[in-house]
Image: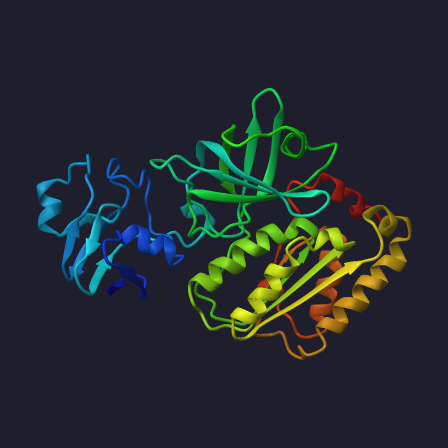
Length: 350
């Protein structure tokens, strides 16, 4: 049985399953309730019950003062709802609402998704999960090896299992270790989140997402967060890469097109390599611009769209030029570099 939880001070609602804590249900729904330990210890997940009945289903060490108990203050990480409930609770709506965190995580899965791209899945401790907003990035450190920054490729609704996409590069010690001899259970240090490339929760506008190569990681996180909220918004995903190797999750994108109403996907693998693109920069830019104009031909007016782009500067500039011709508003054009892919720097030179 499911019950509806309404956050009155935010005008949001989500469903909670039987024997699921309020916090667990919120995270699953992509709603960023404030929390810390998620285990009843720190008290950061306090909320006030305005209407409805709740039940503590997990042990807590944090002691709620009697005065707060009289005000129906509860910990969302240990309480489930018994019927439809209305609460007041703080929510992280912007990157500044999320604190910087330091965690020790363990490798749970390494999957080679193309000839030079790996998917890395790490797990946080049960008592110290990573709070982040979709589109943000973190710094991963391996003692005695080095550190690199990568976009989180997973949805905040999966706050214990964190996904990253790594293209193997001689300049990136973390990617080299992942490709060569990283093992399940290895420990990594994680710091973050960083960045303000995040979804505007209150926008409720059509969305265009554009990724270049492993810039898809940040875009994937945004997309999974948006769809987790079950908002019925038109979404157009464009993914551009150098060679088939760059569309390393092409089948996943095709499955989204089948699963979600109003979702369109266009992927193109350029025949040139990154180095070849920079050797004839002007011709390469014309090739990319021609492709983008073609896939955007059905968009006549972008004045009501939000556009999110994770790509190198030249690709960003080309796409911005294409969108401006269609009445795009610059304040709704959000950009993010391709994190963790230092080889991509070669495309920055003109």
